[in-house]
Length: 371
Ligand SMILES: [Zn+2]
Ligand SMILES: [Zn+2]
Image (tube, rainbow, N blue to C red; front, top):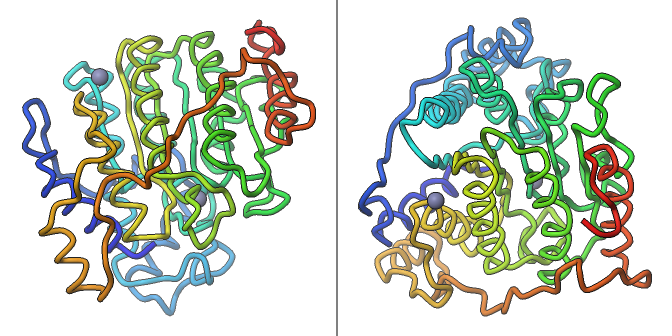
């Protein structure tokens, strides 16, 4: 989770010219204030983060701080609050119609809970942006989480809220943190069906992952007809990621980003807030995946074979003493067969997809076998 992954991503976007494209603005963000943070977090927790931020020795484990996953560091409150500020600003600009799409690849901190830090996440910017958009007039929002890990914190924030549908596609909790996110986790009694979970087997590759994402996400988003589509693009699904056990390529992530973009135009009036998330292979995976995301949101996706700028590769060599990838592709075809081709009971991915469709689709008036 070292900030270098963000620095490398921004530098790659810059050197690919993505920030200079017509219609693209790069905007700064101020740290969210307490009023904003307490829309999704307990005041006592925010105070605990501030205390740990001022003096890391004050970190309290009861709030998940000072732990192996969420070590305390000076300035952690401001850093985490600034991520929230960025996502909230973009959400408000989307609802007000000032921008069509927003990308905050520093965001997507989906494990943070109301009262504690979790899984490298301190403040949940995705939840705060969704709350802010609801307050500013959005009536229905879909949050799609493509991170390797279950988007448990964001899901919990809206567990009983029928206005927000959260859909998380991730490696099964039987093999990965946080151990939740199964097909039968569907939301609270006031909002049954407002949480949807697809738990994929470890080692799922491009074809299975893309088939699964497309078998579940588009039908639900179309049927829910949100005012805004929020997507989390954690790229710890990659085969090189040191934490997750999926085998998704940069190319497949690129295809998924394009699908989310198209879906926003089709189902949410084009209002699309795209966030980063996990991703711990900081040279080969994170920068290229999120540069593709930025390019996609700018309206002009980068061809997979686009060369990685020499200046960026030189920087990587100097800073890390290793070679950077030569192109924006892993060379993977990133093709898949759609669900309409039929269900294969011998395929573990298909069984996972069908479990989710059977559990969730009827709650949305959809047919698990045919929609
Ligand atoms: Zn993750
Ligand atoms: Zn667009």
